[in-house]
Image (cartoon, rainbow, N blue to C red; front, side, top):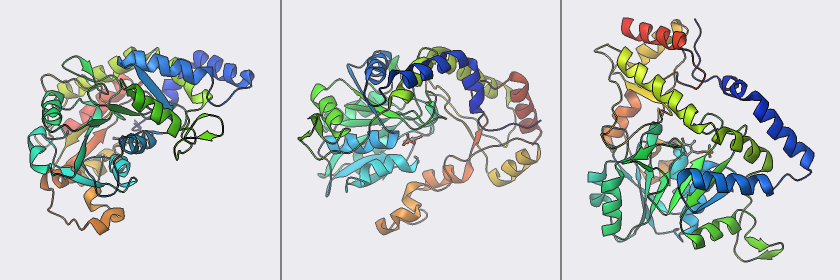
Amino acid sequence: MQIKCNVLDRQFQMYQQEYEEAALRVLRSGWYILGNEVKQFEEEFAAYTGRKYCVGLNSGLDALIMSVRALGIGEGDEVIVQANTYIATVLGITENGATPVFVEPDEYFNLDAERIEAAITDKTKAIMVVHLYGQASNMNRIVEIANQYHLPIIEDCAQSHGACFDGKMTGTFGVSGCFSFYPTKNLGAFGDAGAIVTDDKEFADRIRMMRNYGSRIKYVNEIEGINSRLDEMQAALLRVKLTHMQELNDERKVLGERYTKGIHNDKLIKPEIREQADSVFHQYVIRCSEREKLQKYLEEQGIQTQIHYPIPPHLAECYQQMGYKVGDYPITEQYANEVLSLPLYTGMTLEEQDYVIEKLNEF
Ligand SMILES: *Cc1c(COP(=O)(O)O)cnc(C)c1O
């Protein structure tokens, strides 16, 4: 059997007719940028998350960059961020000239709240939280610390559409919830797309201006903006998928729980879910001290796996000038050496998953 990490066309086939109708509606409308589809999607996604405002953007990275910028954070400022994240999270900070201050993760792969205070200095301007692999971070504690030090929270929700902490959705704890709709994400578009959600009207207005060359009225440029517009086609397709979000996430949860129930091998450490949190299983990430051997063995059995992420940002070539070295963030580095993401996607059959489980247990 051949098992891929992701089979995106299965998701398309599930609701094919609805997608095709939405795409044709846009093609025939004669209006392709910032029109009714974007407006409708923004309303629907704001309602889905329970926030007042949503602004559609070009990508998740843009959502992060623009959130940091709209808070006035730049040169000389520090932003606290977990060390074991995708490079985009950190780029959201460094693109603005600000300095990331890395904090080690907890046993759930998320920002370790108990290590935040030690990282706060008089230059700290925000806390960036990533709900990694689909599981909500320890938001009670993080919000408490942020309030105590009067620091805004920016949430990177690129992997956590629909995930909750204590019943409250990720993206609703901070000033800004940043989403990516990259095709492999839980709410994936058919191209690049992203958004921010917020309850702060001024913040939303600023992001809205920024995404369209800094203008509210055509050719009246109030701030130095960029072009980061969600397009009508992606918005229309996302509207279709959003109506199925519950069932899509439920399917991932079933697959995630089946892995947890089915995998029994002392060589493998399964992911755990914090009591108050839930996970929408963007990834199912196991740990193994013989990771390279395991990955090669699975490949020989026809099973594709991925590593999220092999090189932590502090050791990335692009951040050499920051002067970090191996050993600076041992937990993060251990995760980077041990994590392996198993195949998990909507449309995956139980037979396919049973095959993966069988081979894992035989390792
Ligand atoms: C995918 C991702 C991003 C970036 O999203 P893009 O839409 O690809 O720019 C940011 N942070 C995390 C954690 C991600 O997984």
